[in-house]
Length: 94
Image (cartoon, rainbow, N blue to C red):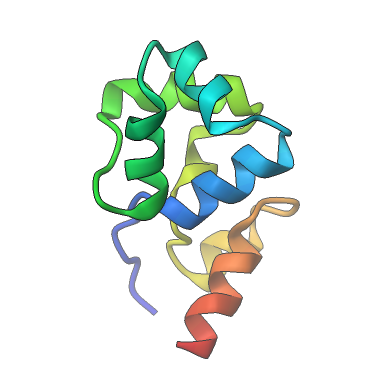
């Protein structure tokens, strides 16, 4: 299977935020943004600027890569413990 270009996952952002026990309000505060901006990212109506990804990952205690959809099965299999298997299962059902 050829590599697919990874893209930002609003569902993963929400899952990572909730797993970290961080509210939208707290994430927005730590990033210097509004709660509405975080809501827009999680709803898929907008995406964060690339320059924000490192700060988002730092607040949530994850890697920047965790904010993106899986690239392919081989790449994800090489990354144990990542959320990639969740994305792979979701794509298989679609």
